Length: 141
Image (cartoon, rainbow, N blue to C red; front, side, top):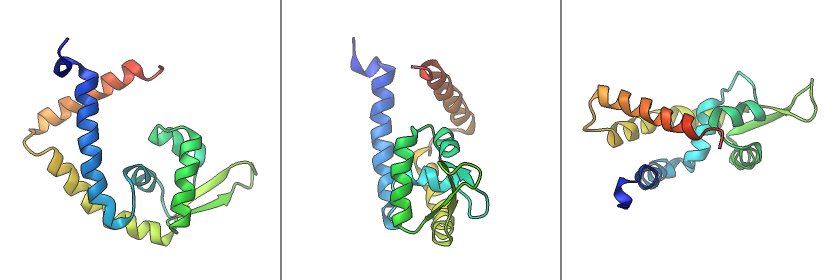
């Protein structure tokens, strides 16, 4: 079987290149792509639990906790004990995190436009549908 006819290989190869590109774009902000996924979901005024965040970005809670600690050390995330359940925390962006988020929005949009250049809007919509179908096929595995 030709490796370049294997969907998993093609997706992985593309993912590696996209991640490397995106990592370079985020470097001036001292944020990783994984940390960006957290920053993009959190808000300065609205709380989110670690469990909700893990589900939203499709990561296990242990990984999310580690990333939250890193963002806390950078002063971008605030973690406050949940009054109703002392075992969980409410997560918020800090003012610094909100500032970084606002600065990154343009960078992320520019990166998206760069990597999708040459694709027609219909092709991009079709790509999203296909990727979602592939994701659904392996979601429970």
